[in-house]
Length: 606
Ligand code: ADP
Image (tube, rainbow, N blue to C red; front, side, top):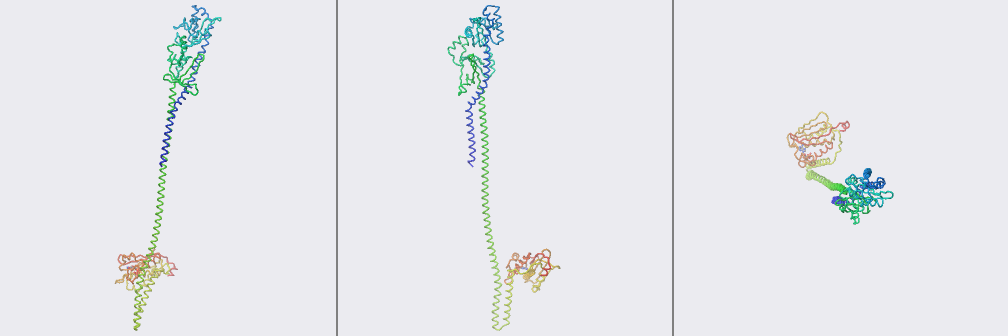
């Protein structure tokens, strides 16, 4: 139980630990993720870099050929030949202006061998080159020496940055002057400024020449050698006072590769830097992609990953928690079930022992009953022997006395007295025979057949049998005219009626007016009722009259078997024998029998 509950709790702790570890892992992976986004941002800006480089290169290449082409124009030859010709120079100026406009360059100008400008497209401007000398510019000297001069610089007159191409004007193998074309570069920066990224062009000396960030113009990204500084001053390429280093720090984004993208920190800004070369101009074009969005994206990704991990952890924890609760419930149910099972087993065992106890009790009860029956039998035997010994001892004692007396009388010759005694002995023997018969009737069932019996004849016969004792009695016999048939044995039924009449006579023995009423009724349960007008049944007699050997009569007067025998006889017929006291005094005994059809054969057998 305890281990089951703690296991899921431990699992939840493990999940929490795993979530923390995953969060730390994701945090640790942030720089890598950031680099991924930085590389992606750089890759996206690679196209911009390519385009900017191509545009720049295209413009330079297109302009590069122009001075040579222009140098072949005869008008320039003429102008160089007659620089003071007031009719020709303005014409040339205008022609150059038109050419500059149509060729989309900022300036075209012609210089004599001293570098002095004798005709220029910007003749109308306040900053006209007319009369100005550019002999200090390398493109001039290069054009004179090598045929093509090229140079980029901040315009000393215009203040505009430009790329200068120059070619000699040759007349019959003789260089008579130089024609120069200036391409203004300020316009490119305007286009670059629209992009979120910064573009910068550095020259061979690592001076930022072009950039959509004006504050970076002419800043250096690497220390300038003294020779280069001198050269710049000599050619007046850049304003010397602005050549200050730009504080920056680089770090490769692909340290394993050793080339490609790099991180560039400029001041407090960080960029992804990638470069392309314009070899002819000695330029390096760089595109600087701000790292801010990529960093932010990386943090967003890290946060999302963290959130996903936390949510996954929560889900897992809730699943584990639910599982834990389920397991706890299952365990509780299981323990409840086992508790119930234990109780059922306990109860079953208790029931079993109870059943066994009851069985034992039943056995004991049966044994006790047997003992009681035995005791009852012994008690009956006891009371019977007491009754019998009394019944037999008295006549036996009398017989003995009479026999002795008879002997004495015979010795004395008094034969008549002796005979009298012998007669008495005979009477005693009759009495004992009668007792013996009674006992036999009680013990054995008489061989009397059961069948339809005429109650009238039964009662008539009984009255006749009892006639000697009934003579002094007022007998009322209520007899219906029709025969009443009941199921029974005629002799035994007669014996019952005789017994009832005898008891009635005994009860009224000392009364002067003795009266007996016999009533016969038919129907479904035919009855014979015998009522006397004696003292009625005592309380004990009402309870025990039918018990064998119950008697209230004096010793020698009754055995207490009459009613008991009668009761069993009537019960054998399927009927009942009931005793009660009549409300107006006296006892009433009712023999209630089952009605029977008088079948002729049965009737004949009566
Ligand atoms: P016994 O006549 O030998 O005593 P019974 O079984 O016939 O035996 O009767 C039992 C007892 O019932 C009698 O002793 C008597 O007390 C009582 N008894 C029977 N019949 C009557 C009656 N008609 N009136 C009063 N008591 C009676």
